[in-house]
Every structure is written in structure tokens, then in C-alpha cells.
Length: 198
Image (cartoon, rainbow, N blue to C red):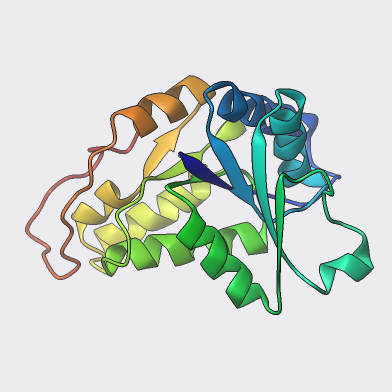
């Protein structure tokens, strides 16, 4: 399985986010999966990549050419794909991946999460999307999504589009037991709050 990992590039974050990302990378490699990600060497992304590398796993890094000048690329990727734009970068990561794990991150990670979530809502893919909620980092975002449901901006069945995991064991349990869900964004009759929501 090709598992896409989205996450922060910041080195200023609490060490717990870096340590858990590195452990996630190790687990991906130990289970003979390949990690697909944005090719960064810093922050959560870099920690996850180092974890995969430490166990001899495979990494597909995807990065726009202009990041070369910033010297932020993890050069030990098994395969390194260069793109002209950020849009092309995301499209390749989405196409090459069988599942998405959303680690703690900022603006770029939020954008990546909502893009794959929206694409799933529109039936462009049926791949699992798992929010790795280390230290409760995503509690407020999850609450925001629940508020959108309460106010009828989204139907309750949207909860089946993603799941939440609080540990690496939960992540792989959800991946192994994942079943695609037929979603209709215009059907507000379903009451599935909490179902498949970790």
C-alpha cells in the first residue's frame, strides 16, 4: 500500500509531534508499505521520512522545483519526483496513494486534508482518510466539522468520509478494516454521527 502522509514542516513544534511522526514512519516501513509525501526534510514530514528510512522502507517524495533553492528536500527518498507547481505536486501525491494520514500541521496540511476530503465527497476517490490526532491537536477542527453538520452545511454522512485515530495501532487497524462508503452530499436524512469516526 502507498500511504500518503501530510504534516507540518516546522521544526519549532513540540517534540511529541516529531517523535510520533517518526514512529509512524517506522511502522509504515515495518508493515512493508511505501510512504508518499511532499519530500521535506524538516518537521513532521522529515521525521516521518527518517522513520521510514531507518527501517529500510520506500519513500516517494514529490516536490516542486523551487524547493530545491530552499534546501528543504529530503534527498534520501527512494523516488524523488519534481513538479512545476504545487497543484501538480498534490495531484501526483493523490494519484500515487492508496490512503491518506493527516498528521499535525499548519496551513498547507489543512489545505491538503480538505482537498482530499472534498475529492472523496465528490466521488473522485474512495481512499481512507485518517486524521492522526496526536495530543488532541485536531480537536478544534473536528469540532468545526461537527458544527458545520449541526448547522446543515454538511450532512451527517460526511463523518464516514474520514476517521480519527489517536495512536499508530488505531491507524493501521482502521486501514486494515476500511470499507468504502457510498456518500451522497445532498442526503441529509442519514444520522451517522460518530460512525467510522475513530
